[in-house]
View 1 (tube, helix red, strand yellow):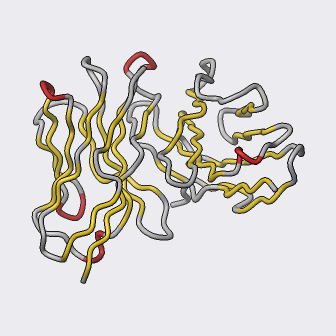
View 2: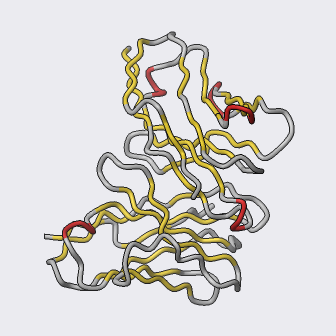
Length: 115
Length: 113
């Protein structure tokens, strides 16, 4: 079965520090990859997605992620975090056997940015 | 525009009671998903509906859980004979058939005493 691993459960950074959140998935075939974010008191929302093409994808608020097929990874990055980036971040992978609709989520990474 | 809505926002019930959770997806979205989010856990896939196809129920944790979607729109998730371990936030999401970006509702926080 498809699985998603997020390496860090809690991350604490100071403003302006660089961020990289790890995500690895188990399936080696064609997948759709996502990062979702949940800000305090808000709904989960899409940060960025990869379906095909350029493996470096840009999302909202200066976030980007790189799909490395050989490493089954889709790590999230931001060069300089802000206090407002404090949130929980979820990596997700679609299951191709379900036509790309069944989506498996990682356990999430809670990011706290100190002002 | 209107997003995904869920009701109730909070539900407290006694062990052994049945509960129904409701989800109204975004109009025009043919795919609808239910997830469970327990404290400190990620999102656990429960079930999804896509158009008129048979739902994928592979994530339902036991036969006490069931879901239906009427008219391709509103969905209800039913938990029978609730147990304390069912306490969690139940999230609903919807998406267009041709894109898999999911739009999430605010969730229903279920507490089983």
